[in-house]
Image 1: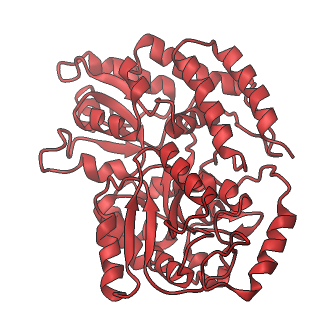
Image 2: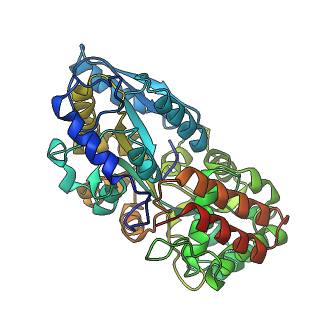
Length: 440
């Protein structure tokens, strides 16, 4: 599951505090976990029985195993998987439509970490008292922040994500390169050296996710952040019409022009880029931790098993900055059986279940202790740098109108990468658009 993926920086939000307060008061009487004609409930975690889990397509193949573990222990409170499209934007659209219809079809929502503000402000998800999540303090603090809106908890972090640089260690070694690149220029120099060797002839240099969808927002944000810029400043105001943002976007534009990024990468989402890398078509790939387990499979699905390694993302003058990704579990305001829903969420967020999940999928956990587990570090040697990546990551804008904001970012970045718009104009227009969407 992707998107991903968020957090610790406060942005300006629309004024909905009054309506949220009234709504919380109205919930005091409870409604056995279902919504009445008065609208959504917040905080009334009541009602027991079967529930559903709405999530993007499970590309890991392990989610149903996790649900089976719950269902075996709770035969009268089983969870049914409602699988949505693979594309994050399509997932969000279906969840929004379900909420606007006040439907109880989805009980628990597997949400990209940047959706919390929008869903909470619109009262589409239920506020969760922190004492209902006993292990909250054992999760990575950065991940917990993704689950909050106006300092109140509306979800529980389930998986985290930090962007990583996957690279063909065998090809770098054959070219006499002993360590992964730390800067964009070093990465391009490494490509030139590898492509000059017999084994590296014809291989593409680098790719990320550049199709016009949420992944492009992430890749654009990482380029800007890794050049020293920000999408929004510390006061939550748009900040993309800057030299730093221009440096980040121009780097991507020029890499497409020169072929450092193959032209077909303009159509890549996570899965397309993963398949290109594990089919041996790329030397470097920016992607999430889930790729590690799939690219290392020895069943014939990957041509590079045992031939790659993982490093931090490169940046303009040194190591780059990842966007914070991941998924949180939230309870629909219109769901029935919310008491079952919160118990299920705690089950899935437990150390045991998160450990079982990373062992099968390589998806980043939110439970802090797992990053220091010796057995896991032997199986997944990238865990230590991943933990640092997550802790130092920057969030995408945490705004109520996130859907409109990310659409604007995607449009501007895509037009620049497609050479329809010059980077200067793309960023100036984006600054104006974001100023109209992000208000105090």
